[in-house]
Amino acid sequence: MSTKEKGFFGRHKVLTVFGGIVILIIIVVVIASGGNKPTVTTTATTTNKASSSKSSSSTATAHVGATENIGGSKGYAVTLQQVIDPASGADQYTSPDAGKRFVAVELKIVNNGTVAVNDDADNDVTIIGSDNQSYTDDYNSVSECTDFNNGSFTLAAGESTTGCVNFQLPDAINASKVQFTPGSGFSGSTGEWLVP
Image (cartoon, rainbow, N blue to C red; front, side):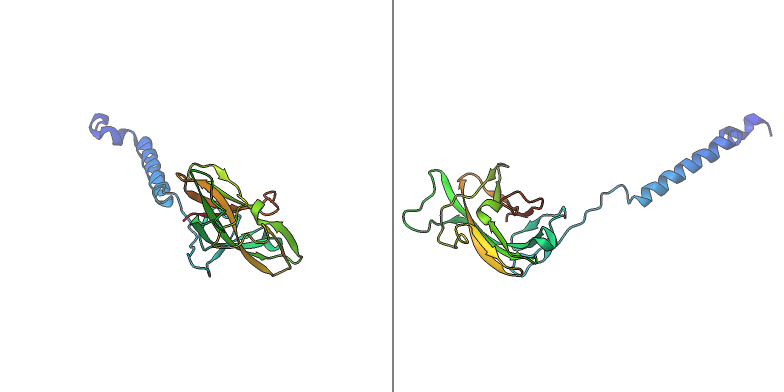
């Protein structure tokens, strides 16, 4: 049989074999990568008070009711118990500024360390609003819960305390996240919860 009668594949056996190998490699890579779909890992959280805990080094974000371990064995286990929105002033003389409302963040803080700690929750907690702005403590009291001891708390190893940090948010802004950074915000670890 002449060369003209063999056709392209018969005349170019090396190119045909090489092309087949390239196609086979592409198929294997696509199958191995699962169609190039990203892998998503989620952390389950619950909305009750006996919720799961996770390390603050995780990239997942907790929700209301979850416990964050902040600072490891020398830090805190902090549970965001609830976000009270709107909250009411502690008495008839306590009211938010015009165009704003009180929002209270109730936390349970456990000392995970082996020594006593002194801290100030009013300086540790921040709300991130739906406008991506940070809101800090307002120092007004609300009727729904107490503000620790004017924000401050002292805990021996293993002890816990529960209280609220209070904020004023503009009426048009919702609370999107709550953040807790020990040491008046100067710690290297931060717990974060999505709201709601």
